[in-house]
Length: 98
Image (tube, rainbow, N blue to C red; front, side, top):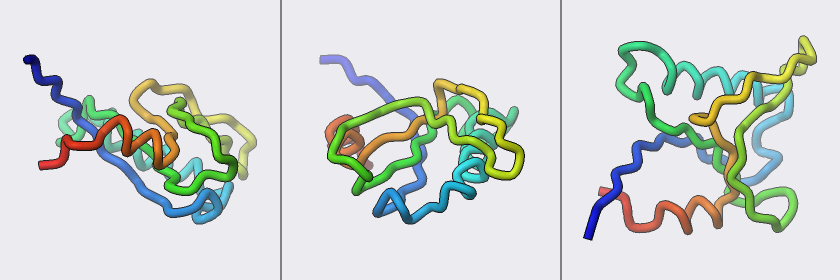
């Protein structure tokens, strides 16, 4: 039996509308800073923006690429920054908590 170690951090929101659209870019850059900054303790981790109750009852685990409301620019794609629904998150990571 092999063990796979997954290094993750997450920002959990109960409902899809808990975070305003205009604040999603700020969330993205906060997560990006954690997983991309040289020397940071979370460098190389995967950061998840977790929506426990999504807008639509559909499962997803996608790159988190919100647009910046003030500039209209879409945040850059980064495989380490993801958006995931609660069911998918629990299914994927159940049993890894220490």
